[in-house]
Length: 385
Image 1 (cartoon, rainbow, N blue to C red):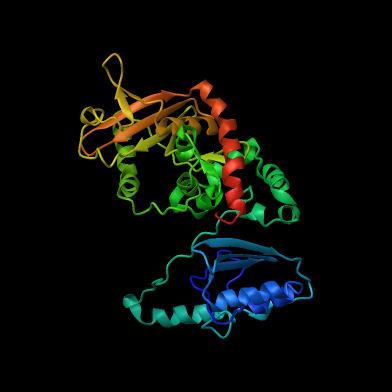
Image 2: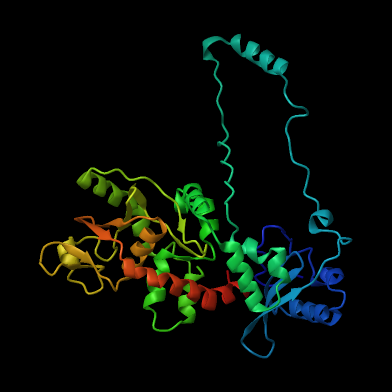
């Protein structure tokens, strides 16, 4: 019996669908025999879309038998310590080793002596890839870690859960700086992905602040349910970010230092500038795909372009109603910088703007936090993270 599209999205447990039946969880839910039987029937009729189990919580998506609708179901149980864990029921295989014992110094010396006899044609080569570096521990809990904490699981109702999140997420200045150091490398650093997952980041601030109403598609985008990695415009920006930074360095003579994600003290809002120029300035680059083969002069003729000509006719300015305006303001506020070099790069031209932090923008920070609490947090609790 294998549920259709079964997935397990919590790393603590890995089930093989061929050997796992919902009935095998009966010992955890002894008072839920009707529900178990109903679940077996759903599973046999291919109505179970997916389910996951983690520390006494069973979450699943079930297709209604008479309607074209999928329901989200969550069951909780306090598991007795007398019950066996999955790791006990399915112990991992013994780690494979090609050696019968650990090599000694004498073994190594004997090998080197043998190799010397072969003369100058002898060489040693390491054929395996280097061991990946250990993932640094974040000085903050991830959203998932908060959700599976004892305090959160004991909470009754959404308000108590929210109170737990607010307490657990708060960050002091020292932790904020440390996180920005640990997450250097950004999309190439797994810790960066862990830190920002389930939180609201600066690239989405404009979408929230400019939205006239909260739509399902907006929430899906904010929760990362859309895979944008293959969108040409996104990939173009990723591929050419280094070109934009190189053009900035050539034009200004200023060096750029890599940085990670910077958080607000709430621990809910974050921003990842493309670089740090100095103690007062961050860097943000944009490589617009639709204008990739145009000059900046040609690009500003488009109403959707992020830049406009200054009223004086000399130079360009970033539109204050554009989503990029809110992004760079968030980056300056959270990184404690006063300025941002905003670089727009095309294959034919580059524009470099120095944008100053807008003190009035700070009023948007409580709005963004409240938006997260009101609209994103309930979705995260429902399992849409």
